[in-house]
Amino acid sequence: MNLIDLWNQLAPDIRDNLVRILLAALVLLFVWGLRKVLAAIIVAPLRRAAERSNRNWDDILLDTIIVPARILIIAFGLAIGAEILQLDPATNTFVQHLIRTLVVIALFMGGIRAIDVIAPSSVRLFGVTGLTISERLLPFLRTAFKLLLVALCVLVIVQEWGYDASGL
Image (cartoon, rainbow, N blue to C red; front, side, top):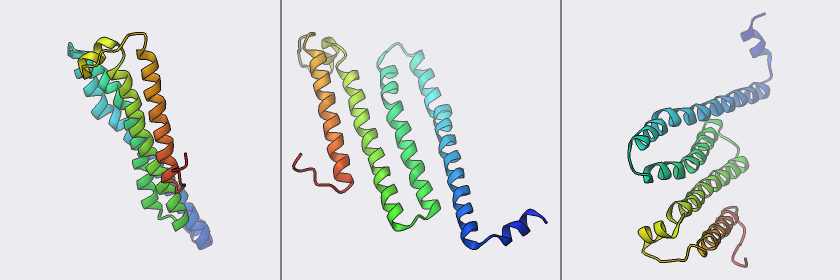
């Protein structure tokens, strides 16, 4: 008895489930490979170019966008996986909400990381925005802006999942 005969003896529902599991595993490998490709093709040359330059901005900017880019790649992989697997409507709705949630998290995480880039010191804050703020007050303002972004992120995610957040 060979493998094809064994496959043909399985019930159609079991075969469909096994094919879906195999496709899900392939999508997982694809997303993992896509992250590696992103690191090898895009991030590594950018990091080498940033190390060669005399400016510190490119290193900081690259470090700022790496984590949100990884989250966006995961969301992209989930979207591809949902299309390949052709999920039932209820599961597809859940996955679409999850994908949009990951995109929102990536965007807000980029904003939170940008706060550290723009305002690590009062000198840099003045250079970027023209605002003069005391060095003692700056950590509190950074924390307040980060907390504000986290609260906005939570509100956007709550609304994305279909809950009314207007009372919050």
